[in-house]
Image (cartoon, rainbow over all chains, first blue to last red; front, side):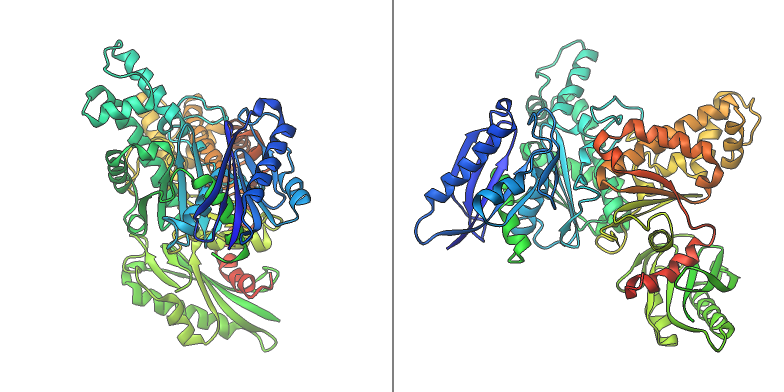
Length: 314
Length: 314
C-alpha cells in the first residue's frame, strides 16, 4: 500500500501521520512545537517526526511523498516561509521544502495551514464536486482559501486568501494587520469575546455568561437576550463578509470549518439566512453554504492530500 | 495585415473597431444602443455594425475573429448573457456567441465589459508585467475583474469580480444587490453624490458645489473643507476595500480605471496613502497601485484583445 506522509505545523503542536489515497490515517504521531526553542529546533522536530512515521511503516507499506501544512504565509513554489508571526518566532524565511527534500529524497509540498484544509475538502470533503469554492476557517482567528478551476488562488507570493482581514466596517476598530473593522474582529473566537466584553460593559455586567466565545454561543443557544445582542452583530458582520466573497469570486460553495463552525446548527442556519439576504439573486442561487466535512484531523489529512492532488491522482 | 474586430456593448452606445495585434484602432464605428427597442434589435445592430467594419477593411486587411464585451453578467464559455439589468432590458439569456458565429463563421469571444478592460490592461496596458492583478473600474458604478496566473478568475458562471458589491460597512445603507454598505455606495460617481447630498443636508446647504461627483472632487481639489469631508469618507471607504482585495488576492498590482480615476493625481495619491496604511506590510510591499493605461477606447480594444489573448498570440 502507498502512503503520503502529512505534517501539520501549528504554534502549539506538530501532527504527523501516514495517509492513504482515500484519506485514511495510519501511525498518527504528535509532538509539542515548543516554538520558543527557535526555528532550527522546530525543523529538527519536523525531521524526527517524519523519521518516526517512516519507522512505523510495515514492510508492505511505502511512502511516495511528504506534504506539509504550516502556520504563516508560505511561498508554495519555493516551499519557504514568507512570514510567520509570534505563533512561530523566527520561522520567517525557513526553507522547509529544501530542508526536507535534502533529508528524505522524496517529493515535498509545503503550503499554509488553511490552503491544505481546502485541499482536504477538495480531495475528500465538501469541495469534491466543486471547481470553485471558498474555505473559511473560523477559529481563534479567521483564515481563508480560494479555489478557482480546481486550483488554489495564490497571488503574488502565495499570500492570497487572508479573508479574515477583509473589513466589514471602515470606521471599525484598528486591526493588527493595519486595516480597520476586519471580519476577524467580529466573528473569530477572540472577536466574539471582544463584542461580549463591550456588551457586558454597556449592560453593567449583569450577564449569565463570561465574555468567551463558547460561553456566549451557549447562552445565545438557550435564548439569553444579551448573548443574542452579541451574536446578532457577529452574524450580520460575517454574513456581510460572506456575501462580499460570493460577489467577488462567484463560488459554487462557501465551506465553513474551524472551531466556531462546530458550535451547532443554530449558528450555521442563522448565518445562511443572513447570507441569503445580503447576496444578489443570481450569485446566491449558484452558491451553497456548506459545513466542512473533514474533521479535527483536516490539517494533517490536507497536508498529505497535497501529494495525491499535485501528482494528479486525486 | 490581420485584425480582430472589437465590439463594446453599453447601455447607451455600441462601439466597433478593427484592432491590430498592437492595439491600434482602425475603422472606428459607433451607434446608439437604443436598448428600449429590445434585445433582437440590439442584436441586429451588433451584426450590422460588424458588417460595417468588414466592409471598411481594405484588400490587404483581413480579420481573424470577433471579440465582444457587454454590460451584464456573461457566461464566457457559452457566450451568453446570464443577467443584464435595466441597462439592457431583455438582454438576459441572449446567446451572443452563437448568433454572431452563425452569421460570420469566425471565432467569437464574449465577456463582460470590465473583464475585457482587464484583458486590455493585461495585453497592452498596466497589467503587462503582472500575472496576478485586480482591476477596478470606478465610474457611475464600480466594476471589477480579478486576474490570477495570467487568466481571469470567473467562478461558477463568470460572475466573479463584482467588487463594487463588497461591503465596507455592515451597518451601512441597503444596496440594490441586497447587501448593506457596498463600496459602490461610497466611491462610485453616484456614491460620492449621495455622500455629498448627506453632507449638504447636515450643513444646511451652505456649500459652493452641487452634489455631483465631478463638482465635489473639483471643490476638494481647490481646498473646500465641506467637499473635503465628503472625500475623506470616500477615500477611507475605498482604501478599506482595496486593502481587503489585497489581503484576499495578494495581487502584484491593483489597476484603477474609469471616469472617477481620471479626476487627477490628488485622488490617486490620497487613495494610495490610505491603502498603504490599511494593508499588512508583506502584502503591501508585493503590490503596486497603478492607473489604468488604456484610455477611453479600453472597452473596444479589450473586446478585440480577447481574440489575440485566447489564440495565444498575446
